[in-house]
Length: 163
Image (cartoon, rainbow, N blue to C red; front, top):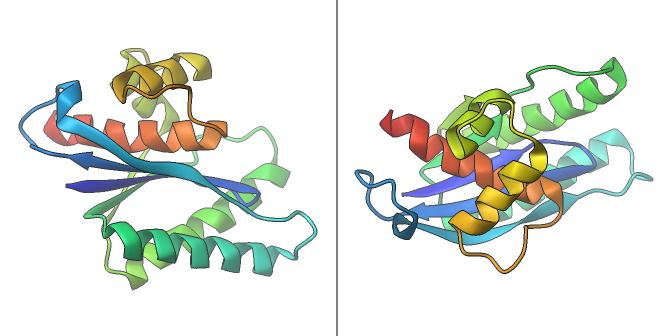
């Protein structure tokens, strides 16, 4: 199964593509990190252009890997409306792109992701990043942070699906 994890944002949308070889095993050797990265939009672009860029880039990733599921981080809380609105807009574009490609979507909250990946729903960001680096035997923590988060989102889905 190919799982596409997405950490939504207008400026930076992280993505992580994970292959799960056998759905009945949760061991490290059952998972393969295929790709990770970020869709980064220019702050000088208008909001509509940034959202179009997210759509176009995500469309290419979906065509390349043909994921069986797209897992996106749910907007759990926000510190101010100024950041919540653009993230919500990006998430809307992500959901629409997945729907147009007939890719089912599953949502997880940040505490769920942290709990499933590290064992603690209150884990620090660095703890999640270190776990992802170790789990996938990566040479370094994926950068930007949004890419590491997206891999964690994809991995968490695999764990919650079996629970």
